[in-house]
Figure 1 (spheres, one colour):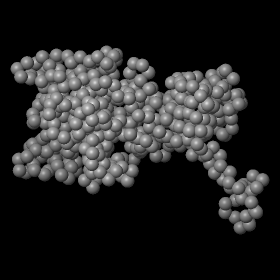
Figure 2 (cartoon, one colour; figure 1 turned 120 degrees about the horizontal axis):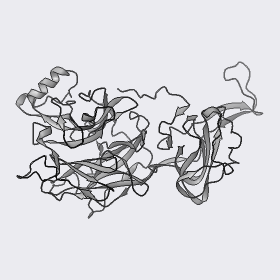
Figure 3 (cartoon, one colour; figure 1 turned 180 degrees about the vertical axis):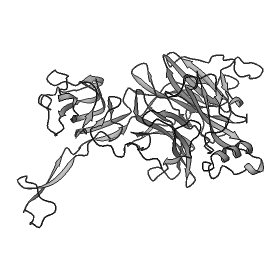
Figure 4 (tube, one colour; figure 1 turned 120 degrees about the vertical axis):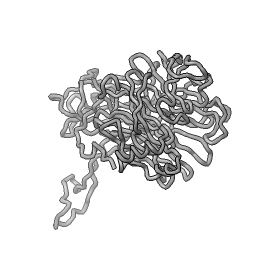
Length: 504
């Protein structure tokens, strides 16, 4: 099992993206506790001396009055549908903002297609001239049997930009592929330990098995497939891969099975030519319903802050045959947790385009209007309902910038962050309060004492709804810390939601 790279990290914690988002409790200090005599004198825990008549608990910086809440996404109108003869069934979208262009790769049952947009709203399907369909290459088809020797199945694709690779392999594809007995044997000879225990079933009888394959491209349009699969592991859904710059490794998220229930697994590798078999990291535990499984993962990261990993797990309710989307967060891509009220997308009503539920693909990007979004594909009918083409429409699931999870104080809340290291000497806050609410911030030195001039009494109260508001102390925004030493922050929040801090 992969060990989390942050297992032995201690404060001060470095904010790699200079951003603090309250996606989980990682940046909320749990406080300290001790027991004292009535006058506040400490008591030895291990002593032969009798206890004093009065023993009092003394807690310091214990967080109180706060909770986390996932923020539901807003659905846009669908911006792309199956309106071409080769687009029978839209599936598995990936979006990358490359320069000023939004680039979309999506599957249409057994073909891979491409579209692009300048604003994220109006999309064009360029005539690429690469693949013939019904006698014409005037289409936006990127791949089909050219990425697999078996033309009847190639799909569940994910595309990512690899910042570590040479220009000719800047783009990488991670997709499903059927392999025959010859390819299976070549793979097994090279990697005898890395074949799924069930992968061999049917191979000896001339059948094929499902594997995860790779390809590279200099431009995201012209692709070169690998001869051997990346791993022989059956996962007939959208698997996701990316290059983790902290680990300096490629990381993949797959479907796995635990007690025959669909789950989510993870694997990492130094070389994007071979993955080991994945380890399960999320399974349908007691927090899910008895008829629920995790169908796909939808892993991505927050734009410009790759230390905030996100997963948009597609939960399949077998009892209702519908999908809903639940958000999980992670500090490292290994440890995952679901915030309370984790469902962020629900199926539409009976006559809507996403009545059967939706699937979220990788690629959270900035959008106009101070928003961030991920691609979602909605289906008008349930998952196992008899399928008739065309099926599937692509839209955005969006949030206001930084507002995916809220730290909520229904009335009065308080906490302290751990000691932090960051660049800059100003703080801006993403917050929303009611009219009766407010936010106060106190700067604390490494001895846990308030820094002069930066106490709660000095802080200018913040009341209202702000995506990016400067925190000031008697009108001064500068955080005065000696030699950019680590500091922590005490926070008082009343009747409001706090989403994060940025420093600069």
